[in-house]
Image 1 (tube, rainbow, N blue to C red):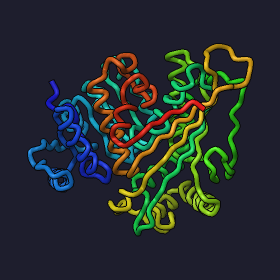
Image 2 (cartoon, one colour):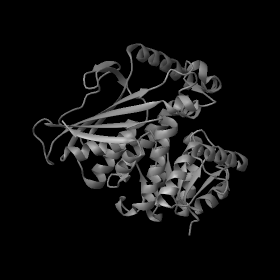
Image 3 (cartoon, one colour):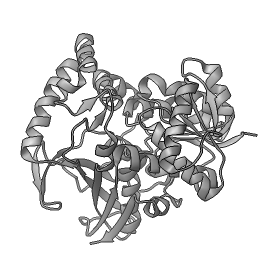
Image 4 (cartoon, rainbow, N blue to C red):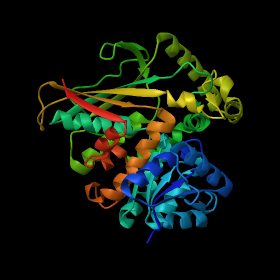
Length: 415
């Protein structure tokens, strides 16, 4: 029998250290047991001490598990002690699979905050069947990437009542005018290697999804590289994060697993025209450099220079992170009934998701609440285990309500 309900793996990292705060609060609210894990005992104890100061509690007696992603036996021992592992160690391309494998082998559920499509889809391809056999749930992208968008589309779908034909997301991030980076180095590193090995993702996806989804009679066309969206009264560009890939996987699961009508998905981000042009220019240079080993070395060694100060190896300053908030508007078009639709969509639904402190607040809340749902609502999860997206895994659970009570709010309106 596992000794702990939740184990935070990577608890001394940039995000993991703040996950401690949320797990501590969850332990008080739900009476759960928990521990922290990582490769440095001293750093883990320091992270507990700092978190204890923030939450006003003595966390010195919290159990510390020493393990290393390079040592499979130590990971297996860590996983055996947990019912659910909250994996905060990225980039997941380098450090994630060994943890997933250990969890699946030991019968331990695994939740992470990865925004890396290649990793997420590779885990589904390699471990889904074994996870089903062992009754293990592996749910990736349970942070800002991509709970708001993926659970948001489930809210839109439920509000529609019938078939959802399409959904578009519009992300707005507000950042205070304070010194310091706005993006963690780990996120930057993930983007570098995701771009460099884009062909790998195509190969994984072809194996995972050999057949295309059936097309809709009513096409959702991409809006372009830069456009004005009247719906949000702002200029926008395509959002290059992992949201769309996660949302499309959910649509595939809904189609194959529940025979639901598959919706088309497009994702955008709100920016000024100047910032869109600047982002495009940085993106061109980034893409050129990421395509070679020497270029990747430059990007990793000088992130501040090539990101125009947006990225730092020191992470995002706490005060700046505290005031970096997001709002995502999801607009769905479809029908109030299910079936073969001969006429264009005649019903619209809007879901607005809001959260504070994107990196160290909302992401932590989403991760911890996802872990709690697996612990407490197993009967509402699909099948008997497997590797899933959050939208498919948690569609019938209370996760939206739990998050809304804890300041990651979901509000759905039929237009």
